[in-house]
Length: 505
Image 1 (cartoon, rainbow, N blue to C red):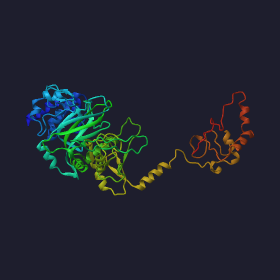
Image 2: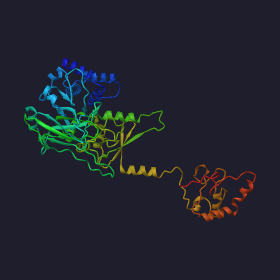
Image 3: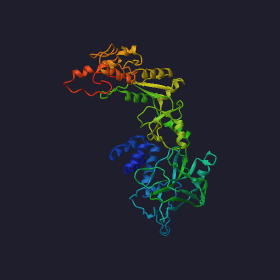
Image 4: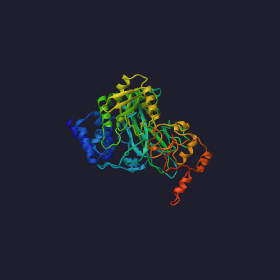
């Protein structure tokens, strides 16, 4: 045990930043910081939480970084993994000399590792063994359509695993051999990406490649779901060599392919893992709520409550198993069962609330909201979290009352400008209020209509333009002209905005 621990720590020390980030993210740890911080965090993780899962992740990362470059790896190669594999670009030199070729270039067994492409782990696929390491597709000529071949053999143990695997559905087994394709890039972890004009032929038979998703938006091209290609039904489950031919469009981008023996999970399998390993306790959820609602003296707005809907944003139904992503800032949850079923059919792994990445390893079940769903009736569709971590149900009637209060609370009292009596003046004096003169109901000296702050004059807008012009020419403006003969007259529009505040509701 001690020897394995020291060996694992030495492997961690040899990792690059991307390897350390992948390891920490797979174990639910933060992957931010400098390399020395990541190394220290990973070493502490190995020392405090040494487990078979952690050891497996470390060894997979190490083998992807140092593929068959040392005696240690050769001695500990997983059972059934072939010692050699052929490159996708066949080379006669490789056959004659027996050298190991990768991407068409001779690769000698040295202690200096070459840059390797790493594919992102897929939640629905557990890699059991690597049959072909990620290897670049090499164009043989200047043609746009290229053919590249690779060969591999299945060991008796691997063939038995496939034969004895259970069926997920008719013709689909839980143990499969899959082909994965991605961009050739050694920086970071690569997602599956198909080249254009792709076709896959296994032992002289073309296998199924996922088609395009139909696009409902005009002008948007259909998109192909880039999933692993199941080549199991066309393989020889014996010692006979299997030949895979990949047809691809050579349009400037570089691609690599790999072949794996995998175990396929269903949405129900992932849900069982989620319930077993990733449930956030109600106490931790309350602490999270209190942190969000804690008073901030620098903030101008004090938040006293947060509303959360009990309706799933995916299917518009009441939540069954509330879940969210640990990296998301919101408290709103979505239904875990529907989320996993959706990603099983169309893997996007995107949060339906904020559209940010929602990887399965960061998915968690909200223990507090799960308790609330059990305690509330079906007619409660919304709750409100309070500053102390408690909560209150919001019924439909309370929601309607609150919406009515918000919509019926104006900034100023409402005055019906269509009724002259309500305005405090008669129609005969309305022209004076238009020109700024005080009539029986006009504003003078800062006083105005009852309830109107600031002394704003209320204008009768029921009069037509002709009556306004007649009222204005009846002598209402003549006194202003005489009083201001020595000074330039101010420019005015239809209303005297300098004296009166015209408020329209």
